[in-house]
Length: 270
Image (cartoon, rainbow, N blue to C red; front, side):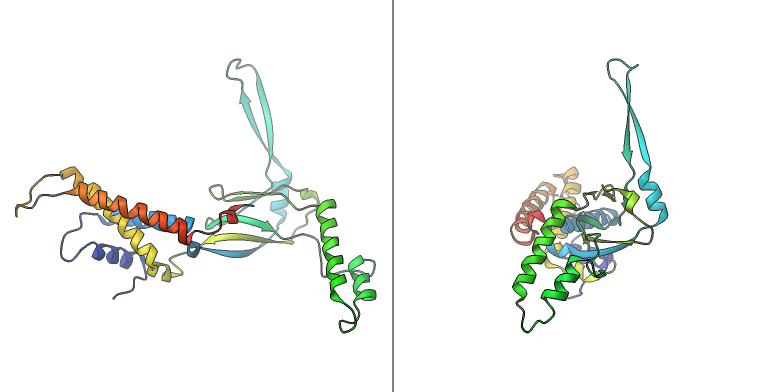
């Protein structure tokens, strides 16, 4: 069996699964490409193998800081009295994100937990209470560090973030006056697998079945426009039956992905 490794070989595989080579599959190449793109989009949205957890590093520039400190003004007009207007300012405190990112879940803390001076409480704790791991219990140290982390969350807090994959913008709702250029952001996110790079995705058994069902639905939709028309050999076209079978297969596969392959529902939160 030829293993599909590209969109073209994958399309050929799906058509052969429908009988191509023995019968004609009345679907154009563009239609097959569209259905494969649709299958890949659905696969990335619901299948845990369609995305990957990723940590992206971003180096803040002077242009980012200048843009974040500026505002965009939007003016609205009252629908009844057009002479009444209002102006709203929106901060440009965002950084552009790659289009493959579907969710941002966390931004790592800006506080420095490594480089400490002698007046830092963590430095003093390690110097006086944790100088010897062989004779000192680490439980007290762990509880103390958890308490310090809790105090940091209460007194300092975390940077609020906003992200929408259709905007491809990560908003950081913080005071950008404290930011300096050349600092790094560590962004925890989920990213779609690129099938052009990781071609093994085309050999996924679920994607094969789902894309084949979508192409079959397209085939049935095309033939339904000529329903009942007899060919030269006396065989009549029955596009509605093919279309109905494809709809049932798609519904079954979409139920299967949500029950078996879907990622936890809270992975998109953040």
